[in-house]
Length: 397
Length: 199
Image (tube, rainbow over all chains, first blue to last red; front, side, top):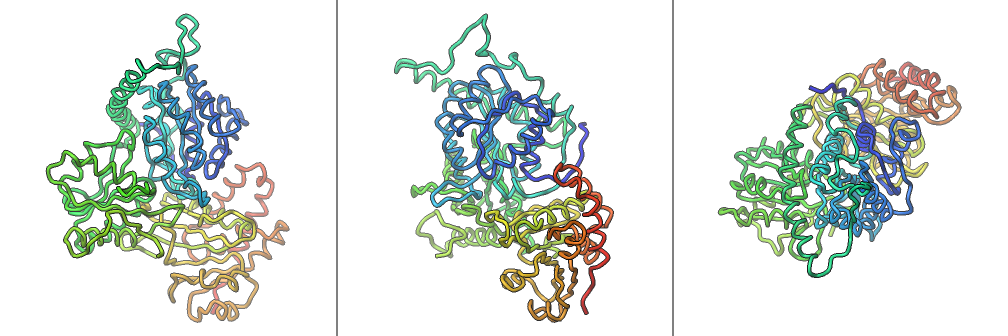
């Protein structure tokens, strides 16, 4: 088992520590709150010679990702990080990265999108990346962010798909908590050495020259996308494999979803990111009152854990999906749509309701989640009625 | 305040002004508890960071892993690092408190004046002139280390040695702060010695 030590770190400090231990070859970045501090910490490691990373300060997030794509195609172990509008600016190149099948890590320190301008947390930025065929993992706290970054390197390189590690801006990035850190050697052995051998077709292989991201005419574009489609579904097994291997080394066993008191639960709340701990506390409070409630956290967001979720919700009477972003389209927030679709093959489908919460850094309290459970139960029992299955949980009207 | 699900939970809320080290102090308190093997959490209220504006920070310490990421709404302990806030944001400082809330205030006011301003006739109240200590020890009104000394003494939430260890590690890790370590350790000790419980 690995050597560990528990220290007090913010999410950004924990992420920078993972980056130091992994010792990426290239980091191309542009600063944006709440990611700026993370790269500040990492820049110190670079300046102090504690890592071998070539840190490239670029003129914007679009260029940051373009730089990473070039570096990763050449065979470098590559990382970038951003937040909110920075992610939005990256999106065009995100499709390029996954289409070219280059592995790399993107840290999304989740932030709202403008307008109105907000530097604070919600998941709107990450929802822009839903359809980019990047693997996407959400972290509840600094500990998970740290672990996820280490696992992400390996997942991405095995799958030959880029990967996003999400952690909530400020709530995780700027808050301190106890984090169990692995020793450097364990991390370096786990991710393995960097180098061209990791890449099936490195750009810089002069004996076997290749072209990346070339044009595809109508006669081949579909086939390219179909290969991407088929291969992206193989990511499930790769993620499982890496999670298991990490569990053997560290004793910390992760799964696509985390279930909390769902075994006999009649009503289940689903969330992602930092709110899940608060949701668990809400479940505990309601359990003390004899309510059979539970909670599910989505850890692997892309590809979506359809089977695991369908099983976890198969016995529930009602499910409240808590979305930290809105789709503004009349058919529910992004997570709600995914959950609803996941249940399409279940014989007994639970009553579904969608709550939008925590937008632009709105503080989330246990009491609000308790209200959400109570509303769900009343709706499911027909005591309350609803005009729409999408409701805002914390709004002042 | 111990919560329904965790009887060992201690919940603290800090009120200060940007630039006085309040966020740092809240984090150092959690870190000192983590040094002693406890679980700790410190979350700033995430406003725009500007010098001089009021800042609110939550610290939680527990024997168990802390699930919640909500701010502290019903603090067991309220720490005021800038006395002027008692006049300007009294309602925010008092929100969620009751007669059992312990107040620790950086001020040179006498106890009866603080009780009157905050309208806390019977609460446990500790006073320390941490700004004076900071000005005397290192010539700047950054009272956080002196306030931490007072908090250690008033609450016993962590021991003084753990606090010293945390401050030492934090200052030694920073090239900017390293030279100020002895003065801040002195401020911590003076805060511990000079804080007093009001009648």
